Length: 141
Image (cartoon, rainbow, N blue to C red; front, side, top):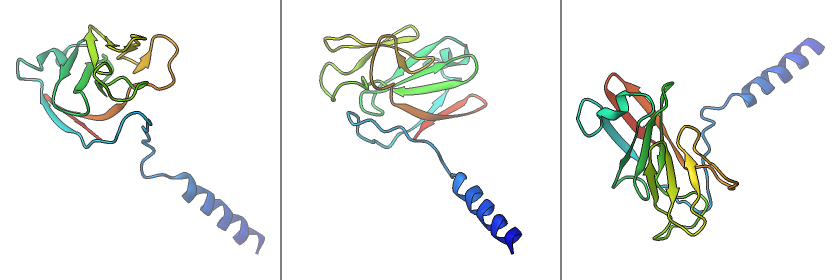
């Protein structure tokens, strides 16, 4: 009887610890917007993403566009909106190499390898999921 009880408890804990998807990227400043961006790195516009250390800006997706970087160990994608301000004219990020700068008065700078601000900030950049198959990259949420 004790073995059955222990087995039931262990099984329950195991099932509770398994999550289908642990992705949680909520930010009170940024709304959830559906994103599904196919990127063909064979095209000249996106070819830079074939090489580590290169980042590109893709407008018209997400809130203010999307920033995509090849880190050398994979590809990461972030919304081009400052994660520490409400959406406004100044919250659009400007790509500067592997960093992105907020246009608001505090001019927060984010490192695209990490998605974190280089100075003290509450929220990291809003990150999107990325899958890569051959020369096709898909950015989605």
